[in-house]
Image: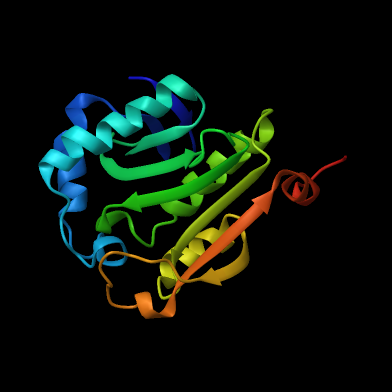
Length: 190
């Protein structure tokens, strides 16, 4: 197991080909997928042929950035995943933060804990200058995690999605945090 980082309650590790069923279970929950696909499950072929190969490609190109399986430290149960990766490979200093957790993990602080740890790691080492996250305007839970992780509201925008889902008429929001601002906010002597 290639561990990327550990927190008090989480282990974030690289995905492996054996994780297909874990991703299928996560993406088959209509509530988990509500703000992503309107509740539709991700087909197995997509997980096997597109999603996991995408995750693996990040490990080759950016060893410290990518998608990470989230496990409970106590017991090792699969909670979901986090992303901390550059959507534009030509701009590896600007990374997107994301998370998708199983419903039993909701409301327990795991998303905030993992997000903060990834931000701390990203800004604590050379390379990352800006972290941003996006979600639907109506996704209050995800917006709250972004705020608790230290990101600030930047803008509301309207994306051109192939299929509208409930709430998409209100647009998407972006939150972000710059390296210099993060360092200013850290406790202790400077």
